[in-house]
Image 1 (cartoon, each protein chain N blue to C red):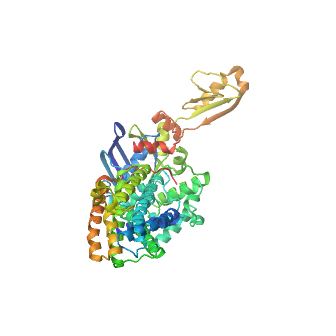
Image 2 (cartoon, helix red, strand yellow):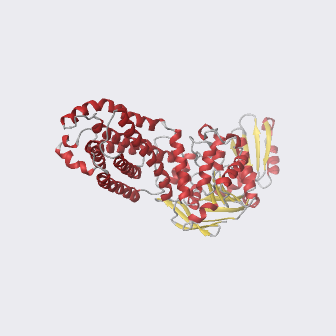
Image 3 (tube, chains in turn green, blue):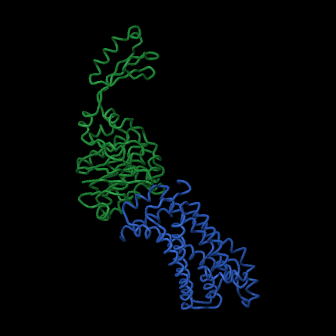
Length: 310
Length: 257
């Protein structure tokens, strides 16, 4: 459904994308991961036709995205990172506007508004002014605007920023249902747990290229590391080979239980202060860390926007 | 293409309706100003050989034109708000720039034309002004001026990155076009340099045209003749916008409301 080849983009002297390749199949949710400024938003903007690339190609549903954008528009839905709704209009007017813009009209539009509102729990809010909604409700409306025309390819750029737990759960469930119906979803996020919850495939963007790409289980098996963590009352003792962090020490190891046992045996008098032992199995976060060398920090929403504008 | 533009027209009209007060103020204010200006202009017109004139014949076209230019500041805000609300890019995802600009400018044209019509109509009734020429001649000039205002609007939008810049430029446009166009005083009472510069403003042609229709009974043919330079100005403004404006331009609203 989405085929990106050799995509490059620079803002002045800052190279954001350097020959990026990415394929997303119908029905696949692709968790697009990367730190702030890695180029996630730039990739989405180029693929959606909002921003010109310096080089490379993007094909969507077999069509050249740089030359066939008119035909592609109806097949693509985009919920950008920044909340984009009309706050002085009602929820239903917002939905009607963006449905109409994407070619959905008349009874089909009314039906789609009802369906999407139901799916994202907006049905009781249709007559409310969008500006009066809570943060989570606004985020759901923002995402709903991208779903009205039944796109085959969906770009969701950090769709759960500012959403509460309930809204987040509803959004993730909706994304999974869309994928089950055959929609390809590019899901840019810093929340790795969401990618794990949805069983999405993983694309880790670093240094302007996709550094790691594959199914979640494969990426975790390839790069993930299990960790043993020992927590003490008061300052943790210093042990060789263990990372010291206040009251905790932790160590990444192929067999963390054995490492924890060995550490406990070496504690001597400090053993009486031991409060907790935790074994953290290999997960996406540890795989991400291994690939990129840094943690997936949460996004201040303005930062990537500034990057994209720069 | 047309259907997307129509969707945008409907949406913008809803947005104007949701925030109608500033527009209404720009309809009421010129009528309030007229109350002060009509007596002075009555005396002026009597001296100039229009003994039965109310004074509105001179003052109304000027005030109407000036406040229509002021209204551009409010209508322009509707363009910049799209950036503050992050909806501009979402609209761009669905349509091409010409569709979007049609969708944005047609409601602006409707608002401006409505303001001109209401101010002129209400002013005529309130001050008992007689129009010597045919009403159609007045309509021709108002329509041409509304089109020209939309041209000014898109040119200002194309030239200004921030709404503050837009507002400042619009104040300059209001001052220059109103002053040189004869909104405050008849052209022949202006300094000679201003008289020489006046024809280079669209407002000169509109105000002179309206006064001639109202006071001297000029007809539709004359109004069409005066509308031609106004529409040429409109074309020039649209060309400026077409050259300068790009879909990916980043515009900055004052704040997000």
